[in-house]
Image (cartoon, rainbow, N blue to C red; front, side, top):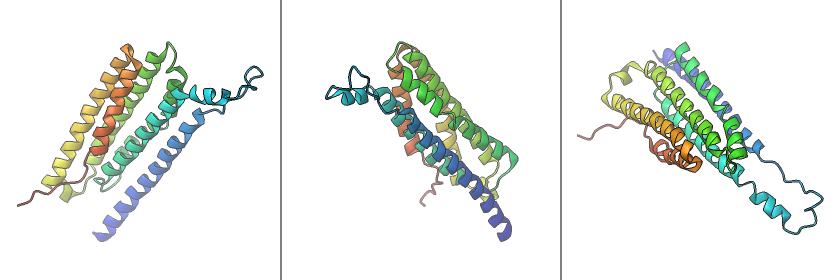
Length: 216
């Protein structure tokens, strides 16, 4: 039994290590959106042209902070979810792989958002960004189902563990709905849609994955 437990831990640890690397790469790629301002012959003699050029990068700063914070919180929640994974099967591997597929896609909608946030196409860029986050949430829901099927037998029968999984499941389902609402809101106001996405940071940051034992 101890040998089987050790093997199961080794399998889940390997998946988590690989996932950590992918998350780190996705977070690093976000900074590539920033380009150093280049002076033209018309403005190179101006004393403060660089300050104005850096200030003009505000859409990139907003997109970078929003996406970096989102990926960081996704990584934290992935860590919390895998506390419940006792073993690894193909369903869990493919669900985790799909999630990583969408996570590594995040730098692209981030670049689109940075490019068009201060332009007439801001709403379309925000819809694209919010829809990507909704797809990521769908990936988390798939991963949750896979983890739920790979819990330890004693955890499956444990009321605290069952309560924890119900709590996480409700949060994931609510998050998917809210992201879709954010995409719809972005049609009317890009900043409104992004604000809704930002508000979900509170939900994900406070989500408790740990089983809570009732005091008697």
